[in-house]
Length: 121
Image (cartoon, rainbow, N blue to C red):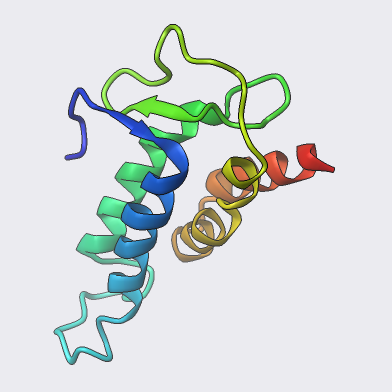
């Protein structure tokens, strides 16, 4: 479980950790690894990706949909977190969150990313 009391910068956590888990999951067949039943819509790396993304989602619970820049993996958005954010921190989630929604059938992740992207325009 990723439920540790640690603050993460949202954008790098998404790109490096969530993106890495999804890439590893999708490349399992090329690595000639045994594929779990129901792959590509099931697997241990995908389960970890869902866990991480679920812990990132509270950062998107803002009036505009633009996410906070930092998230605590155990407690959510830090109490004194600023609402100031950059465009890269808002538009970068669509690839990973979109892929996660498509693989799991749960639109929650892609909806959060699309809402953030739409808020930029």
